[in-house]
Length: 245
Length: 255
Image (cartoon, rainbow over all chains, first blue to last red; front, side):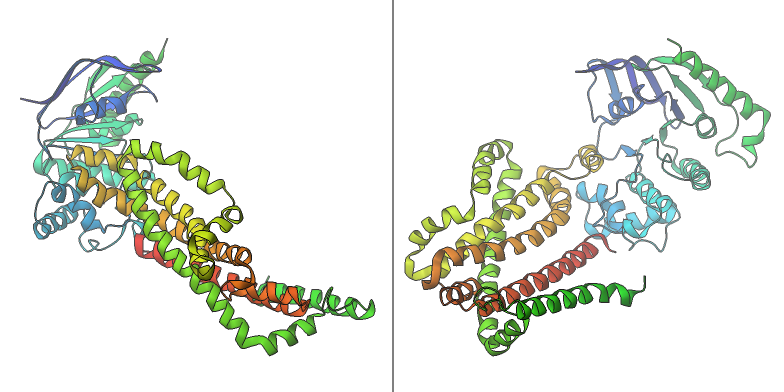
């Protein structure tokens, strides 16, 4: 059963075409990484999937309803005046859930991302990695069927990145939402996804696709296996091909 | 550089300048109505102390009244304007015209409207006009300055217009309002002093009135004494407002 789909979508901006024609179907519970050069329309594709933008042509199929789709942006995008709990509870409160219940669910979501005890902290008191976890808790708090991650680790250091990648995968294993994960980083794409979709230079079309074998979440040492290296090479080759004029 | 040296440097410079001033006035025998010696100014300060403080309070209280009035009006108008783009269009040119018109130029008019017997009303009104803009423009900017990704998040979760206003836009405005009030308070004092000058000696007995009065009698040392108090008032006000803004920001973002 598919969770969301883009069918032959094209997006035109006043300065020219940003995306397409582009098609992507997401099966329930699968993790797809979108890889492509800067400006290829990855973020535009995400906004289409989130319903934040409409395509100029083509069709977007998505599960309607509040909280069915969640987005994590490149920056944590937290409200500085709210605590971690207040930020994580925001989607529920906007949907009219009673304050106390929203807070309890927010605390549970914060605990899932490893932030039990930091519920009362303000974003300014958190490290970059912790702020990103609050952002993740906010996305998970409505138990979405589709989770859109728009380069969520881009601003973090390598160690925090890797820890968060594993955490996202184990969180995924709990409730199995479909995930679309946008990244510049080929290794990260192969590590996180069951399917890597490579896009061409803008306006982005599909350059090719690599199915990633191996169990999810990844076992220790997965990055050093032959298979992982070979799949990273395959994705890199597609990227280079897609960037040729 | 040690902290002590940093703190002492400006004090030392002022002491050297004052000493040079004193010596120059004495050796060149400058007439005191033209330029009094620092010691004469200090003497004027000492004898007039109570009166000067009273006048300083007069000016400050009018400025603070003006600040409160300006704050309430500016925030209310900004909210209306922030909610309606068409209203913003309508108000913008008027706001600019009012802002670029020097307060001195409209002071005589306001004085007539307030009634020549009620100079203090005119002074408060004029100071409020000057204090209005930093708060107004801060509020309008702040209402539109919410993080665009947070705006998208509110779209995603289907927030209502009221939710967007109360849970995103109004809280985002706080730092801009703090900054606006800091600037406005300083301007309110300037506005009050300028208005006092225009109101002349028949006006409320603030610091500008002191300066005018002493000037009319060629009591230059007294003029300087009032200026010193005015400068000190400004410096203290600035320090208090800086601290208030910092404290406000700490409260807003939790550190």
